[in-house]
Amino acid sequence: MFWRYFRAGEILIKLDTKIAGRNYQFAEIKHVLAQANEEKSGDQLAQIGSQSEIERIAAKSVLSQLPLSALREQPVVAYDLDEVTRLIDDSLDPIAYAQIKDWTVAELREFLLDSDTDLKMIEAIRWGLSGEMVAAVTKLMSNIDLILAGKKCQVVVKAKTTLGLSGRLSSRLQPNHPSDSIDGIKASIFEGLSYGVGDAVIGINPVYDSADTVGRLLEETHKIIDQLKIPTQNCILSHITTQMKAIERGAPAGLIFQSIAGSEKGNKAFGIDLDLIREACALGKKEISSQLPFMYFETGQGSELSSLSHFGADQLTMEARCYALARCFNPFLVNDVVGFIGPEYLADGRQMIRAGLEDHFMAKLLGLPMGVDACYTNHMDADQNDLENLTILLTAAGVNYFMGVPMGDDVMLSYQSTSFHDIAALREIHQLLPAPEFEVWLQSVDLLKDGKLTKNAGDPSYLPKRFSL
Image (cartoon, rainbow, N blue to C red; front, side, top):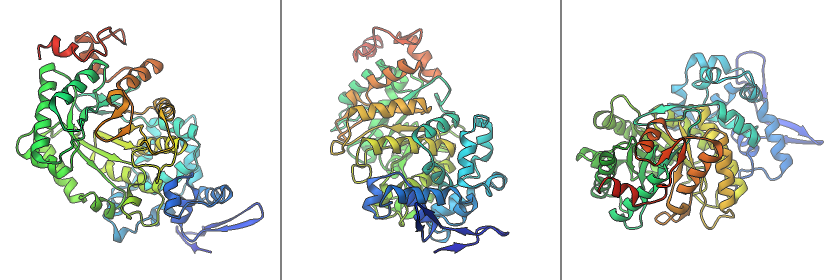
């Protein structure tokens, strides 16, 4: 049995409980967090997940009674061993933390779900929360809890477009091509724009990670944005160092992208560290904007396990640490590629849906402008209906944006995502509009009228003909 004083005073924290006549004991908080997690194939692969539902209930019971201060004092990766832990802990606001440090995880859950708790009250405690605290409360929530609380945690962010406003749903236009063909990319861009897709960013995953390729694609996307006077951003999702080289050579980037992990070791596996992100931010302030946000981060449950950088922690908790890291750099976009890593980490549609709701809620609670790439790989036990179910639930939860991929099938990355048609359907079902600046542009080019797409929608030749391109 593990005993430890986590606060001054007489409160003693013990990590055991009795359920159905059986004693359950946990060696440390990290184990409680792992075994309280909903079933994930990644946790089973790491051999840290619960072996039964009753063991999961026992872990949730113990977790619910932990004070939030205990989760700060016992991060899943030690402060002196990890720069991500240090950044997260050092960034916490002492006034906000003092307000909540004596709350139990259960009390945080009740606060978030209380009908009297509003966004202003959540914002007052947001910077007192660490990744571990947010992960802990997430493990006590049902799917509908995650939707209800996530909906409250609105995050609005503005660059050339304004994302996250009530009554709005944005999208990333993702015109990937298996050979980085400019003609193929342009065809996808024009089709996506005709469906009202692209107000978050026109973002391309390049096949070739070179400064020349990145520079060429930035020039071409910038040219389209400039010629059509589209209020949006461009971004090429190569390694951050490659983008920096292209930007230093004069390439016109709207955003700077990088995948991140929840530990220093995980980030090293991505070829980055915090100093490199800071260097990119300095470059972006000089070359992109000194006032508007321009960072774009991508995450996904399981990435730390894939690089053996999870330190025995569960994938949800490591994901929460990604978000606590990301918010320190004031990003314009963050998204979770929820089913992209594969069945080793999320085995099926049920796990994918749960993870998508978890990740959206955790990021929004921490103050991030969160989008989700609702997606799956073809070797997962998931299908298009699972993906569409997740998009409906996330839209109800107030997600900032989704991906827009031709026919929902990314022919370069070989995975299934949301299509241009899906974005249009989700807006129609929920009576939502794109970002206000983008809405005005769509109206000006006769693609949107009275909140509905016009007969020109879906015609990839319409914009080139209109603008004589």
